[in-house]
Amino acid sequence: MPLCIGTSLAIIIPTSISSFRAHYARGAVDMEILRRWWLPIVIGVAAGSVTARFAPERLFKIVFVIVAWSAGGAAVAGAGHLEARRRGAEGLSDARLRLFRRAVVLSTLMASAAACSRTS
Image (cartoon, rainbow, N blue to C red; front, top):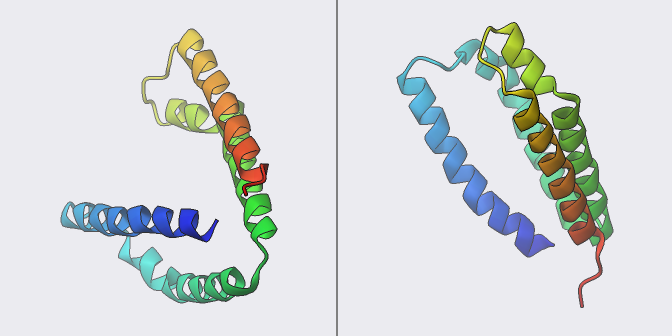
């Protein structure tokens, strides 16, 4: 599991930095929010690092499953789709939306099963 987390971070961190720089160049970053949240973010990273060092592997699996199910539930509930409609964006057709929701549920189930399976 630590290898999985390390690999994920090796992708997430450079992608996040690149995304921030691109958005900042277009003036699409609210620096006031960043100024307010920098300290809680640093504290969260430090607390997460300490937790990751001493927590059992099973805790990582449980957290992964909870996050995956939460994201899947939000997608199935259509939270993003409803927000897009509120903003006036063109929504997905009903058939495509149902297909998308089924794919989210299936991928969430597969990820949860993989996280909970025992590896030798």
